[in-house]
Image (tube, rainbow over the protein chains, first blue to last red):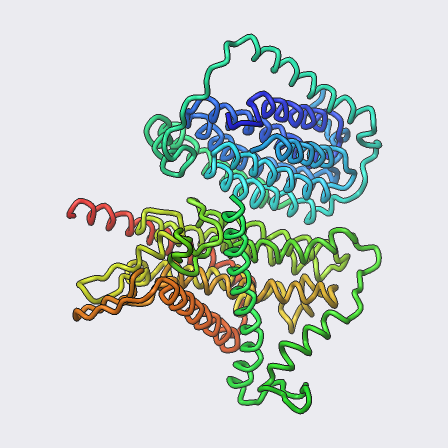
Length: 103
Length: 164
Length: 365
């Protein structure tokens, strides 16, 4: 690792951002913000992968990040389309009110 | 990347991430997300991952969050939520939990004998290096990802354009 | 170490200086060239002690002073912070891109070779695309923060247009990357110094003519210039997404418009017209194909190259201004159709043909 910023620090930062994202998913009721918190979690994981890639000298970590980004883009597109369709039917984005599948 | 620069950027990242999660207005959350992604891209550059850093800005900050902003503005989702959002205790839990996990990770890593950082090959993090890895060892996931993107395009267009 | 920092700062400042000077010239051209095309004289009333300087005083001194002294109005119930940030978000990425545009080859100064490029990134072209994607935020935030239905409409249409043409722009650039096998703009500019058949400078336009056309059209659409200026259509949406901006913020939007014009011109020059290359000029002087060689000191060579770069950029800025005052505006659906059904397939075909040709040329060599 380059001097001054050991691997542990990067992992620590990634853990903190991941925790913040998780809290966002659990606490917020607005679907879009929940989605954004999920993106935050994915990015924290990206940081971990890149940090380990640098620490182990292997490009595999960066390839995985490439795939994570692509899948996240696809997921964001489909997820937002679902939200649009939901909004058209229910006029709400409050996750507390989107409970039709609950039995 | 020297320690003070790292600490400064890390504080900014955490602040931006907290804004994403805690701010009542979704538009501000989206803007804070852009800032977070951009700062993470700076970290990627410091970690010798130049291509991934630029891709992060192009794909994540420049396309995905724009999509989020579009949906927020088209649906005019700027009304405050019914239940009050992240207060101080929630923020504390978030940061506390994160630091706790970080401490566990640090402790775990200390048990592993410290491996000397291997000398990085020439052109590490370069486009050529990533491409070489991608098209040899990971060519199957690459092709599957392109199929996935096609499916996502078809699905998104189909879902969003249904009438009524 | 301090010398490196000083040199890097000087290079970046010089690149910015060049960009802003040509932008100022572009603003002046806009008024004068439009006047010439429309058979009138143009602004020439503002004068200092009777010296009106062909309208230069009006455009470059009176106009900025007017903009800066106008009252800065923020609409009621609008989002003040975002209203303030949007013009910055529009201008900063456009200016930041100039960090990777090379304006000369190398300058031998004090025993070291200084690469005349603001920042030597080995992913320079992707940096350009990244800054182009970040430019969308200025538009979308301006439209939303104005608390005005028409601004929002202009903002959303503008950003949809920008992200559509980003795709075509990126694909056109892939053809260029295939030809030169590098993403670094300085290497691409250097590679265009070769001579084909001993006398023809191997500029990019000879290798990628289709990519040039696609990139130019996509670049004009990205900067929302006429014929693609529906988001700010002056005769229809008042000013579209920046209707509610006055004074200095309006000036920043205007500036970002012209900075993007200069940026597209600079990128087109670097990728397709040799950048700073002067035909037959190498690092140590002229080497004419008929045998004569003129030795020149490094400073003179660098000056010639910077001047050539500036001249070419000014030429393409002028071209975009003439296009602006000649063509009518695209309707929104025509605009989107051109982007997705016109430019995208063409640039995809260009990528495939380029790849095939590069493969065949590599086999034969």
